[in-house]
Length: 256
Image 1: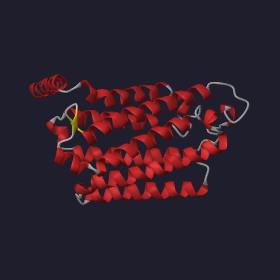
Image 2: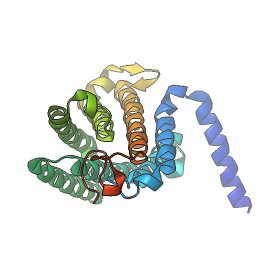
Image 3: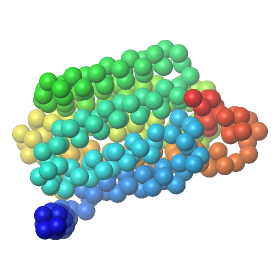
Image 4: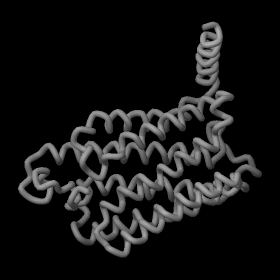
């Protein structure tokens, strides 16, 4: 009991000290992730049979993983590579799955399958052999791939439905969030060494970390909007492709 009590009070003390000396901006990303998680939990009843059915477990993994890394507690700090690789693999699987069910182009669907397969295998191989130095390069490369896929989907849907109709689609907001987030971190991480060498910081954070946190706020806000739009549209009685009785998602594709 004493051992458990010591660990508990150490955790609380470390948590209070961490919050005391860190600018609140650092936690905006965690807060946005938590809000998106709550939205996914509330709307799960309507999304559980759609392409968004994995949003709840995905957001839970991301929020818990990034929050414990933020605390910098020794036990979790020692597992930072495991947590980072777990989040990266989940990102490839989740965004690949969602985008695969959103796009209608056959070639783009094949590219998504290839991307998911290569990215997951690469992450697993580099982690298993301890080649952690390649992790940033993997994030850059696969980030650009997700950006290209998202932008391709946005371009095709804009041409088909027009900007006004498409902006009401859950797929629009998710693709916008993914493209903005991964393009931002891929570009910033490409200059990681130069930024560190020149000591470029904002709010006490290296520019790369600042951009990543700001981009995460945009990403998880877009995910929350996407889930809310899906929930709203599936609760309405549309006679067309938005009719949930026909088991069609708001982007006109049958649930898988």
